[in-house]
Length: 410
Image (cartoon, rainbow, N blue to C red; front, side):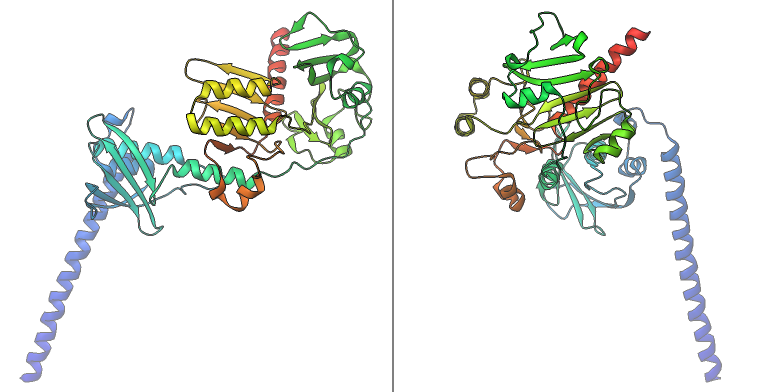
């Protein structure tokens, strides 16, 4: 009898455990089914504005982020903690996801009625802390693991790390015009070519010689050789030479490619770009005159924050700018050959923007390499971009010219 009672007791216990397991399984199944149905509903729902969103889960499904739970925040500065499994890296050198996360946070802020909150990914040890202005219904600050301006800092670090001296190509310069310009420090009046009064944009067009010349402050900024030139410019390459053939002669380009129709190289004296129609040449800036004066102007600007006085001072010591555009709220001053832009309210980077063509010091006694070795030495209002302004301005020239020529054909 005792043995039978023990068996019955075991059977009862097992039955109870089975019921508990089945009950838990049922509720887990129903919850998963609910989540699946909810996700499918949200995934198929059409959204046209933030007002179409009602819940945190809805926002996260829309962004493809796994929603885990929402709780009252463990930090008094926030109303809620939203636990998730993020589906996109915050930032890599190849992928900048600031727009993705900013959009997600703006939508979450809306459904959270602009109360402060945190988005927490415990698995990846990421916390997005979000501060809002509930009266103005705006997001005021986003901090990634306690770091504000996270994406700007990451972009800056990447740009600095990737700033390297451009690999130079040995070129045999055969153009008499280029050799004469090099010999005479690129002074326009040293070319045995009369200055043309009629111009197309900023260029003198000398059709019979196959030349187009842009001059900036008495020096040749850019000289273009068209098919009418019909002589070798470098390494027995004439305007119109097949781009694949040029690559065989000069090697892999450092700018562009034959596939996109424009490619370029740098030597100790010139930047040279090839298209199927012409050859474009810029000088390599070797000396930075009045650099001490430039540093003094920067120091003064850092003290008094007077942009107008700073820019006026820079244009006084360096009148050889190739772009100077300004309006009520912005300034865009560029010294492309020097490898420096001075911009305010043109992009997120306000101040001095240096590219890989800049070879002088950043401040007195401070080089790019010093900053690469220790990012904490980066001065305020100082930014870097990997791609040189020479490439930017040349591609603009090329595409503008292509559009004009295609317009004529129509």
